[in-house]
Image 1 (cartoon, rainbow, N blue to C red):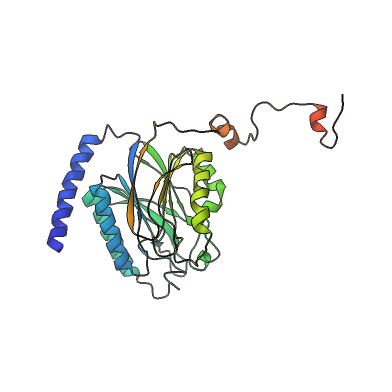
Image 2: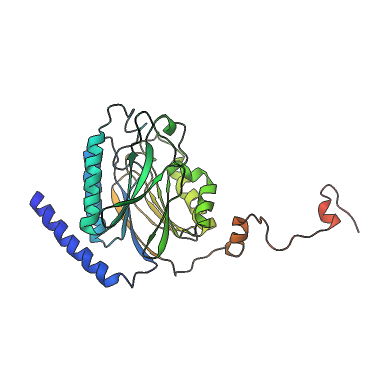
Length: 309
């Protein structure tokens, strides 16, 4: 079985190398995105097997980048893990290195949700690693807004992350960041065209509001800022599935709920979408919070009377 896997990796690497050489110039401004879901758990080795399987599937489907959920490799503290005491950091490092090797072997970008360890006595970050096709971590997004529960386990992040892939400016957010439209506005100021947003909204109580409000909130964020959004989540029970949203705020496609899968979506930044706020968005970003020219008029300034003429 291991020999068969090695042969498959070699074949995929050869295909990926050939595709990269043939398409590097023709793919400017275009991306094929694989948004992945599987039942994230406290078992790092099991999580890695899912990740490996889905990276291979994404590569076979010629994805440029493979996007995973929040804490996909490590498991999510507070739900999958009750505490980080006794956490197996050695195994996490080992499996992270294996993901880096896969990225290099398959010539693919990977966005990996995990826990990033800090100094002794300092709570770790809840992070997304940006892994390039050379198998290198080129940047790391740390969850900016941690929930009250998160703060028992994590230190919050303090920076934005943008990276360029095929001429497309990409940005990152994690889960609870969705509640703060200011983050999306900042990414808009940074000319972000695709936002990769990783979630862990799974193993919730029945009747949770999250499956209803998270995708629709993301639709609003996409439309008001005019960027594509890839949403990933765990597919453990009581979750909601991966979605891909276009800059007009519509859902292009999504996976089935509570089952593992890989969602393949296409981006071409030359495509035009309905954009109701286009004409005035830049003014709003610059602090001009009205359209047209304001007037200086006594009838306008008097807001407590209707002046009859």
